[in-house]
Length: 339
Image (tube, rainbow, N blue to C red; front, side, top):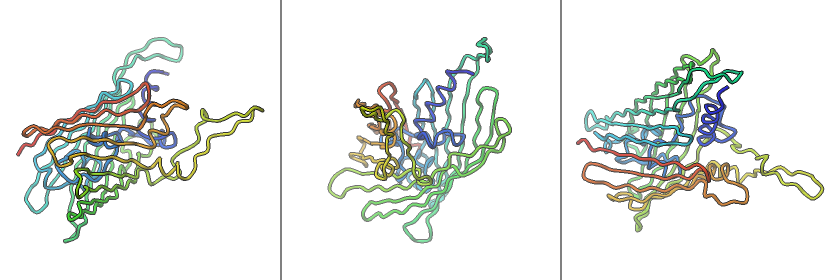
């Protein structure tokens, strides 16, 4: 009914999920990038157990004492004029690892001109969604494993339709401080709608992710490796636009092999000077690169890069992420140490 509105939503869902994942569930904004740091490292990183208070929005197991009294705000002028951002804060009740976290994710789709089926102008409308999360993490005994959880309250209003939902995240992380290595398994967005848009209950964008990272011993580089959407295999499908035609007019559809399927689950990233006041970050998202690439044209889809600068109690971050030749995204963030 409203072409601009649905075009914007379709684009948003496509870049956050693949063609097989997008449209299968509601509240897709829950899987958007949460910070410039995450965006720079390929769009999804799960193992930052440090000052990065925004990390806990994606993995509650990373909540730790370094996040105490840290406050972060992040913003992106996203694709199609969509604006969204996140905010996060953590507070330690006492030194026995009782750190609690609150996070907010908000997205505004902007204002749209409405038209009826005959093309007659109707009232303009807007759409927005938000989620508030509360999280905590605990060490399992005296081991190197930590278990964390988030509970989320979700609200959504699209034109005259509205919905409320509830979800939770669970994360388990292994931390080896001797070799500065972390590995984690995260289950995200398990939940349900409390009230639906139009009487039909829709599933939430449930996701299972696994991540690893390590700081190299003699080089100031930290590598990150993430495997996303492990709950679904295969994740990719052939693209009709990439079918080939022989001289006799016979068409051969694109074949997505095992290696291609595996790569579409993979995200890689690296940080230079990970513990310094100035950081350089780069990442590559294989699924984004494969699904948004243009045949016979190099457009560098999937690449992302960013920097971070710490000035006294402030840390400023910026990331530029490449999606297509016509659509890129910029992410801005600031974190304040309130101690």
